[in-house]
Length: 521
Figure 1 (cartoon, rainbow, N blue to C red):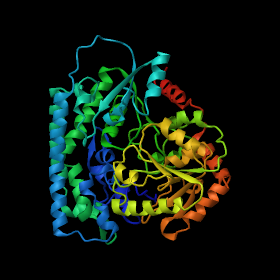
Figure 2: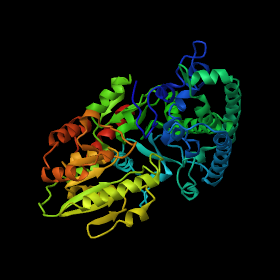
Figure 3: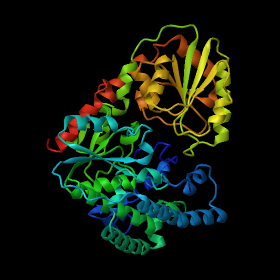
Figure 4: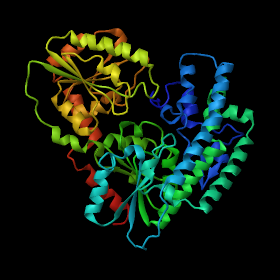
């Protein structure tokens, strides 16, 4: 059984079988939820297979804190969960109605035989200059080659209200029509009624392992996702993608994740229309969790390691394409020797640990301040705190600024890579992608595991010096890394070689090569 990363679900052991395989467990008289419920020829549960992952669930329904700390599900908490599982779908429904009303309507277009590549993007991926995060280089490359036309299409996440971006950009909402709305309404009502026919005993079996019954905790997330409102959103999005693919002569659908129900809708619609869907790896974790490739998606992955992972999940080899890491295209320009200086530069790259509810704010900053104090006790060092673009607690970091500590809240790869190229040691708290980026630049790194918070995407490839916060010894470990920069260099080289194929700034071109092959060009 796979080991879930805390980003997805911080509960291990028997709970994993529920959160990973809940819809495929044949516990209903020899049948599974997948056997009983299907949509457009695919298991309904497949669209929601990650609904119990922490990053996918509404924070108001996070039951993991109770399980993690052994707290009882009190009557008060039950009422709170019940209220949110009922009200949130209705609020989302109202929000989505407004998006449909605001989005520009589809105008009459001049018929064209130009074949297009659909790029699924979200409002939070749009940059200030109009470019699209992660996808722009590929869009530009397709335009340059002129064999296909790029067709970026916008979706606003359920929890977002970026209405102004929907007024003048191509979004899925402009393809709405009365037929699709009615079809989604009828189908979701029918499916909701069918799911509600499951007895409490059957639901208990879906979420029980041996004598342990997790249904009392899981029921609220289940009820949220399988409410009539959320089922409508699923089916509405699917029918929109189906229409877009047909009307816009789409030859390939491109996306950066196979995880959310919206992304699953594109994969499913692509399969129905007999065109490929290509998932471009944008992070390290895409292959670490079980993948049910019911939608027959293709994957453009960083390197051989990720190919092996996908093969382990029974993805056909012909559906896996090694292209190198597109997200690290720009870093090759920063491979240069750093001049030796007396003052050593320590770069602390932080993450959204508080924002995604992995650690309480108070605990995090208590640890963080102590770590800064320890680092300041080392002679001749300067510390730069580089915050994650989605962090919000900037004031707490800024309060630590001194002669030896500075903060950097700027966004963009150029800023991060400049800081990495100048540092003598990277420190992070969660084994994130910055460890890989540091390795590409041959920079030593250290991962400090905070209390009750650890992960290791890299497994035995990890090139960072790992140390537990509670055990101390941080000062001595940092001093050793600064004095001996060649420590763990072989592990850095192995990680880059097997995880990245080649880092030459041309990965986007190799992805477009794949798109053209899949499109028959």
